[in-house]
Length: 172
Image 1 (cartoon, rainbow, N blue to C red):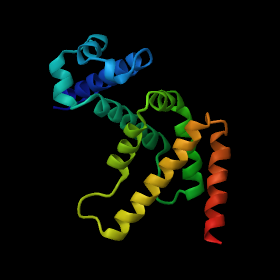
Image 2: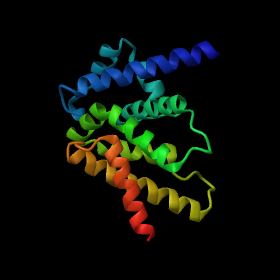
Image 3: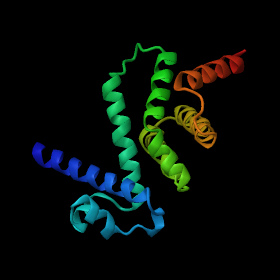
């Protein structure tokens, strides 16, 4: 059973990488499922067994990259929030090529959907927690969107410091 799961995850990532490769040369709406599966070297049934849309494929890729970052960082509950913020800004900077590709193709909706899907409130979560999470997610997306729009000129450390300073100003 474990081998099947590993193989399936590999095939899903092949599909995601194929879509990203194609997105570099043509708009998302012009890319066909057949093109994606041909480039990925998988059958159409593999695509449809795992994904419902091209946006779902891109969301999966963002999720996998984020998951790898979390594992690499070995985040712990005693980690300082400033340290976590700096690490996250560095991660975002590392995947800037993909984020810029999504931005240039008008697909930032995939980014906000992915963030909300994986980090947003879960069913049954209390209202206060759900509202706080949503506010942080959408506020964070606004900052990320502006950073992308402006060409990500600040280093991740500079962006983290701007965010920390802004938060301190809000609290005072």
